[in-house]
Amino acid sequence: MKQYISIGLALIAGFGLGFSIDALHAQGKPVYVVAEIEVSNVEAYMKEYQPKAQALIEKNGGRLIAASLKAQALEGQAPKRVALQQWESMEKVNAWYNSKEYKENRKIGDKHAKFRLYAVEGR
Image (tube, rainbow, N blue to C red; front, side, top):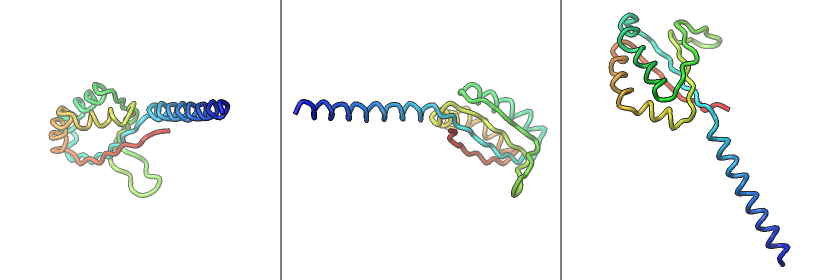
């Protein structure tokens, strides 16, 4: 009987350890934010919006890893401007996106551009 209890406890402990490792592994996945931007007033966008937008990304733990004034379409139509950000977690992305500072700066950005943003969890 003791042998069955020992085996049962070992199975439960193993399951718990496996679950914990999976949870830790999931937390370590980077998150990428893709921004497709169609700018209507380039000069105002570059002066009034972009510097603060980049500063807020860095301040909140994100990192701009790619930006292009002209993306190359491989299929379909490419947006005029693309930016790719890397973040530690979806929680950090949501904290940045829902912050008061981002929303205030975005009001400025919306005067000069149309945005399409989405977050994708990495591997």
